[in-house]
Image (cartoon, rainbow, N blue to C red; front, side):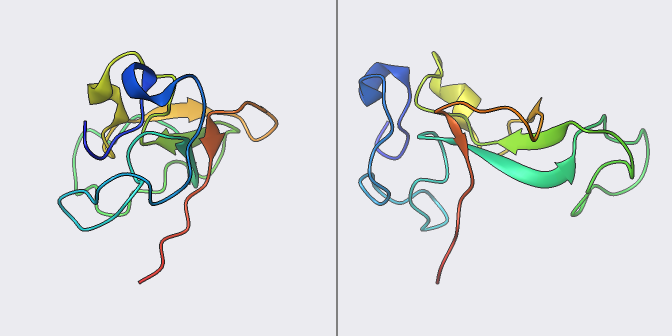
Length: 102
């Protein structure tokens, strides 16, 4: 893909930010490269209601992960909407955070 670093094109490592084309929103490196560790707690969405800026439950250690990483086998797992989880004490080379500047 023109804007995603994943297993097919990443060569088993991360890449410099801004080295891929911008996505449909004009943002670079928001999909793939490293997964985004979010402050929101991971849990299932409520069965009813709106999900705008849903931050998860008020308890639990698991945090939301978004965006996929350079080691994903399938580029579809690198969508910004992909929801995974991990724990704050976990260390690996494919989870980080993203800073978006105008």
